[in-house]
Length: 421
Image 1 (cartoon, helix red, strand yellow):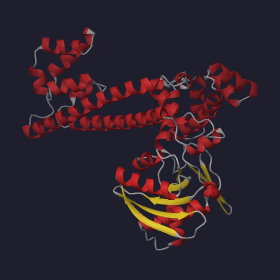
Image 2 (image 1 turned 90 degrees about the horizontal axis):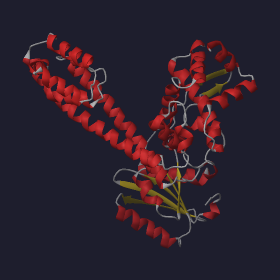
Image 3 (image 1 turned 135 degrees about the horizontal axis):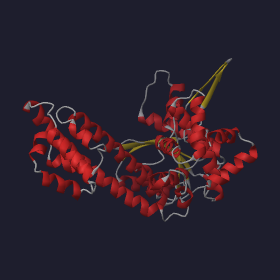
Image 4 (image 1 turned 120 degrees about the vertical axis):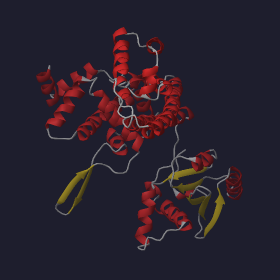
């Protein structure tokens, strides 16, 4: 349901949320009087407050403005069909407050009233929250949580690497990939060089075979390197505490690796059942991880973005141009959904290895003097235009079709492709 005018709402509410309580400012339609109160953040208190609103305004629609588009409070309020939520950027509220409070004094009840004023005064610039289906929202949370867990994995492997360099650097050469179970199991069993060198050759061979190392040459090379290695230090004052810390980090890394597998399974089950998944699964370099993230990035509400440019701007891929007098400068967008931008940029970087034209386009940008990240963002900008059309028309991406389209338009990229080929 679309709500466009004040007459459609029986009341307007501004909420300044917090962890334990929320400050509320309410103004009934047709009245100039404003009412303020504070409600605790408990399911029972929130339900009692909403029930009071339903009774007082006879279940008519109520516009509610808050600095959130997701989170516990949004989840709690979204289940009431007569509440229409209008999320607003916290920076908007901060700038509005500073415009009338040069001292920058801040108070929660005041912020609630400011949000109410924004809702009443600039209603035409605010969009009501239109959540996607429960399946898509669940998938969105899963891919975001997975990305955070992957970040934890990177931090743990970095700390492991740093710690091992203090007393057992050899193992870093024997195992190039640190985010593996064989690396974790080896360190759990032999956390020091001395412990590993005391192990029998047959024990080491069995360990490697049990961990799917099939090459006899690889096994012999590792065992020979292990048996002939010279310790960096024999000082127990260094080895003992670092070895214990390594054990602690390995335990955390093992749990993290299993958690990533669990997320991958849950994401695959949900994503593969979505009718749009095939559109993103066929993209160069997407794979199961990026295909799911791109599916979430575009979502299922095709009316949400009127053009590819809107998505480019919202995702923070399109640069910002500022002008003042005779000066003009361009910079990247500082405020945007970070995970959404990460999705497009990270996949664009991966596509360079899998798409011929993407590789040539990236190199073209580098030859112009752009840094790696700027070149990847330029590629992501181009990819979004392509994917937007595929998404709108429900047509899977085809590299040959796109290259033919470039040729018909006489694109300069085709000339560069011809030089490379």
